[in-house]
Amino acid sequence: MFADDLALLADSADDLVVLLGTVAAVASKHGLFTNAAKTEIMMDRRPMTLPTFKLCRKELLVIDSFKYSGCFFADDGPMNREMDVQNVRALVAFCQFQDVWASPKLSNKQKMDMH
Image (cartoon, rainbow, N blue to C red; front, top):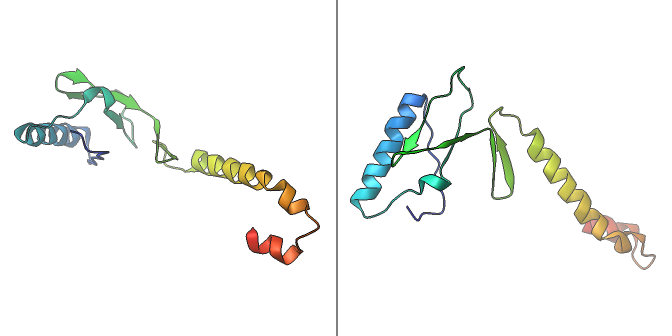
């Protein structure tokens, strides 16, 4: 499948297996395919024994986090890692304007308006 991205949500591992099969069958019917090498599984509640997921007879990688559009997602739910990344990005951007903040040519109001 040459779509940008596709996210499938299922209530159970069995439901996900059915969903993966359905997507593969429908795509195939229209001459499309899903690249199993670029397909990954993330579960929010990991069972004691990890099920095996396959697509086109290839085993899919089960991951605990991924980055999408600059944001981090993790299987434990909290966005702590994402918030840390965004805070660092904000600090870097703020520091790039160090000359502006130190400039005597701009009033404090102008500086605050830019901030």
